[in-house]
Image 1 (tube, rainbow, N blue to C red):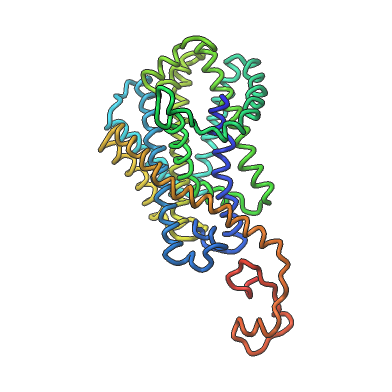
Image 2 (spheres, one colour):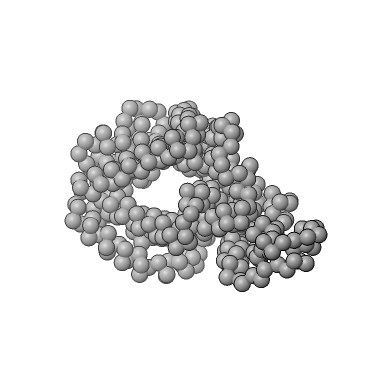
Length: 411
């Protein structure tokens, strides 16, 4: 449980919180374009509009597209597995392509309707159904045991988070696995995948958090989702382990994982009342998660390409929505599961430059925050006249220049 939370709680949300805070600070406070390169203004200055800045933006867009394609591909496999159990839909390439097509249609429809009426309503519906499913499992399972585990798992995670943060499986080469071990195959890929979502999540979080203080943003984006992740994993994870026989040699869910990982969730729900109905709801929840990811990503990619904080023309947003689905579908058609595995390797490669960019955001953000504390002297009349090419100036024209401002007169 601690290792699961290590991968999906604070560390994951820190990867999203950092770029979100940097985007919000530089884009809204300094009126810079809605692009990833704008975050690096303290380092690059006006070069954010040149080849270096454009290269940064291209990597951000590509990373978002490929990261979402991986999500759609993996999510499609789980939806296909659920529909195979419920209605006998074959687990085949054509059925996965059909599912991706339907998800793309839903996402594109949401995009066309707009942020408030489409994306927001679909997202709210998704969260309500998911939370309802979690509450059902909490009540239908051993409620007291799960509530006790919320506190115990939190304590274990708090105790293990520092050792886990430094753990890198260095002894793996001396075990039967050899090489980089389990962490090399899972942790590296997972966080590379997560990092590719950082530009998308950063812009999205900054846009919906405009007007918040830094403290409010960090609590709302880092702390709150991490605590919810803890509760979610305790309810579903410990319920599954209890069904499987805690401390035993295996059970129905372990057997399902050995056969097909996507089937594990549906095997889990077979142990609850109204199993077929709950399995159907679970399929809807998974589908909505990926549809809402696709529609919001399409909006963000459109913003990153145009540099405008407002949604662009409908045809542009639809183009990006269709492109995301087409990339995932093409990979499934060309290689099936092998295609997704190849894409996972691509994600690891693409994740490296984006990881470097996100790390450099720390330096840029610190520079920006430190500049906020610098006491800036008002421009003299001579300095103002020299800067603006004016021959005369009044007292009201004297302004204070921000250390990061591109044009001191604008401040």
